[in-house]
Length: 296
Length: 276
View (cartoon, rainbow over the protein chains, first blue to last red):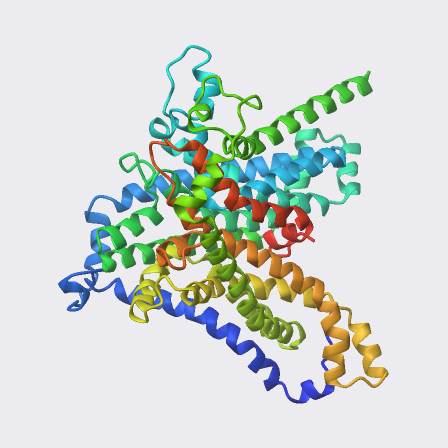
């Protein structure tokens, strides 16, 4: 529904524009800084030392380095695996399954599960990282509770299965968003349509695959869009849990960028990495947005 | 027969659902319990659940060693500060957009929300350099500026969805009764906007409270909030489970209590208003 503007405001529209300006300005500042990063990516600027002051333009050198030096492509691969398994396979599928199952459950159970899923989201990344290292370390919960009492040698999960542990931790942390979105989506599917499919002899699988999923397709695309982007650029939980290690096993792009910029000190190279990440995220978004619009 | 099968299936589903809930919840519960153990009991095999000598020692140690209350007040200052500044900037903007008759409003909103997709790490370098030059590193003001900036899109968006829901008829009726613009804003719009503003406020406090990336990179001691407090305890060897558990419990307690009271609003906030 459209608002009827107050007559005075309708004749003084600039007031409305003026009110929005501070917010637009501040959000624009974020974009402006992204522009800075773009400019840095063509320089050899460093965090400290001579090149922190006397930097010079180096053209596309930093971008060439992305492909010629070791590091970027490996991190891109790690990030892809991390995003695919924790966002798409983990959060989305688990979120959908939970949403679909819990709909038929009594409200008490549903409430309890919803509350626990929300807990993961509520807990700060740093604390989540601690919870998971306490669970998976050599003297951690899984070892003390299951492995050692059964007579096996304790396994240092966080060292030996670093990437899977990080993926599971992120699923634990992030399923709430997918679950809530899919719950709302499933609520929007009318019962009649599903019943009609049933009457026409569609099996349970067909009803989900042919009827329900196409109807909630826009929701699926929205969900994918957001969680893929967030996971792709995610930093705190992984950094606090493993610091990118052991070795470089969990060094996703965000951590690689962070290390190159602030530990190695190559701000120019770091900026090129962040621009590359932006481009990848942009392409992914376009892909999902097409999925969102295109009717089947 | 069919009914018997479906009952059995229902029981199975609820058992699985309860189990999943318990598994999700277990690490948090375990941390809470561990915080009352001595370091020795914390790594006992097999683990002790309830029957150990409960002690508050860890909490005292943690307070003594790294001053929980100072970090706590830093967290409060930055979270509440950035929320208030954010609301002061966002309320007029969201209000203007909810009332604006142009078609471009939706585009502006989408543009704002799209900045939430930028990788934070990517803008860290420019902001860090700027903060260094303006001596804003490790200050409350610097932290408040950054937290406001990164959360503003969500605040504007949330408020917009709430303001949009205020029914037009009420405004019409007020105007019929001769209310001017001032009365309309003060006595009609404001009271109706309060619930929306309140839940946006709450959501933003939680977001700012949990924010770790910027707080860890832009603060060291003076303005360091609870996230930094936890991070300072992380040792890769995990020798201090009990103390870390106490520190974690202290850090998440305020947020869990807040979340408990406002689950409904959180659901809406978490999904950017997509789920009512």
